[in-house]
Image 1 (cartoon, one colour):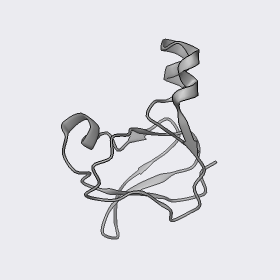
Image 2 (tube, rainbow, N blue to C red):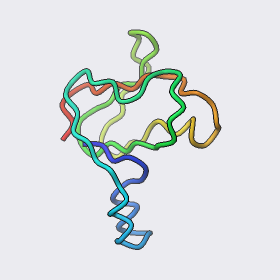
Image 3 (cartoon, rainbow, N blue to C red):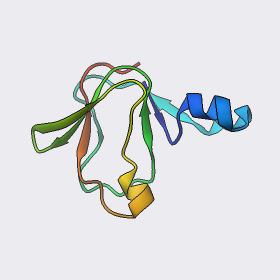
Image 4 (cartoon, helix red, strand yellow):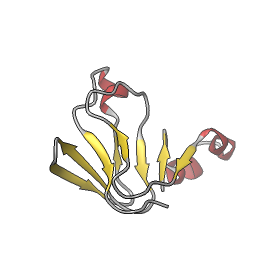
Length: 92
């Protein structure tokens, strides 16, 4: 499972718990493209379980595991996403 926007742990410990209602979670099957290179989405993704690969074409550059986050470049730097992010295993 990945959480979009903010980590549940951060929210529970720092931000008012009612903010949890604003989070979106998603379950992903292996090989699901979470976001593509060139996207201009405005979300930060946090890995809650499973693994996500950062890729350019078919080359894996990095594997994100529970506790890691990704996808923040468009949100923070206002630039297109430099990588594609793909679920490596089923994410609950």
